[in-house]
Picture 1 (tube, rainbow, N blue to C red):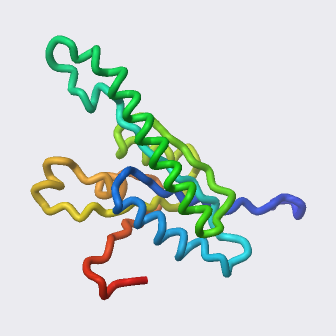
Picture 2: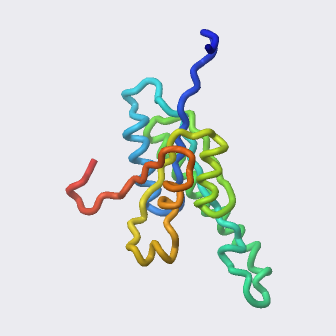
Picture 3: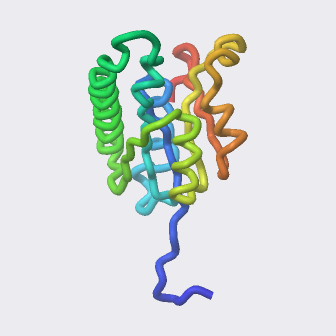
Length: 168
C-alpha cells in the first residue's frame, strides 16, 4: 500500500508528430478531447515525440559521393524536427496545455514510437492516420498498423475527417 503522502502517478499519453497534417490533426484532436481547459488537472502526462530518420535511410548510400550529402541531409532533418516541435509546442500553448515533454528520437518511426512507449511506461499512444490505400500501405508500411500490433499499450489512431460536415 502506498503511503498517503505519495502522489499518485498519472497515466502517460504519447502523441506522435511528423510534418504531416494528419499528425497535427491527431495532436489537436488529443488536446481538445483529453486536455480541455475545463478540466483543472488532466488525467494524463503528455509526451509529444518526433521520429527523425537516420540520414543514411533517406539518402540510401548508393554510389560515389553519397557520403558527402549526409551532412546536408542531417541538417535538413534537424530543421524539420525543430519545425515540427515548434508547431507542436505552439498548438499545446494555444490549447493552454503546459506541462508537456517534447522529444526528438532518431530512427524509424515504428521503432521510435514503440521505444518511447516503453521508456515512459505509456498507457496510450496516439498516432494520426495518413489514410493510405492498401497498395501504398503495403509498399510503405503503416506506422499506425505496426504500433497497434507491437506497442505495449493501447493505440489510438486518429483519422482526419473527410469533407466539411465533420467539423469539431
